[in-house]
Length: 297
Image (tube, rainbow, N blue to C red; front, top):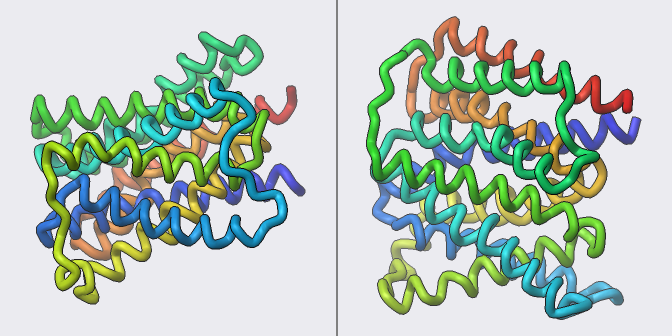
């Protein structure tokens, strides 16, 4: 029963994250930059989480060693500033479709990285078939019947950079989750994600005015991205990595484009075809094969 709960939480997190491509695109259209969106959503997430953690008796400021503190810095950069800068910037130079397609293939790269460092988490036999099947499903879902990609070297490279960032984040979360609780690790991701943005704003010192941020449509999007998609989802994601392992949990990213397409259909009136249904079935089947084999070990 507990394993079912962990899988359900991972699925719900990815469902929410799938919607963020659309809400971020709306903020970009409204005039906010990729850096501004990241900082504002992480400020909201960090402040809310800090308020909560200050009420706990087990509150701690730093990790147990400087090596572990550097690990937290790396998590903040790979899962925070660098990931969101590359992902959000990619949507400026290329389509939401291209960004979603490239970023959501990160389980392939994460599996290779994790297998390189952790022999016990290598994929075997039917698991490899399952992850490849899910990857093919991602391609079919994202293209949605349009088999000609609008290539943009800069945008697609940025999206691939985001893909690699999340793969490294998944790798680094393994030792972090073994040594520290989920709330501490997540708070560190937020604070170092924000601190690592300081050099960027020293070069490009630009933040939106309060009147822009307080516009009802922009504020609602930022609160959703900060409270739900950042604070709650990062807590839940890091928690299930601790429970299920990074390889299994990262495979859920394959389902991300399914919710992206659904939200794009609801909000942006983008088209859904039979390819969406076929791709979704491939993703679900592939994830089932990976998780079924893993659960029997």
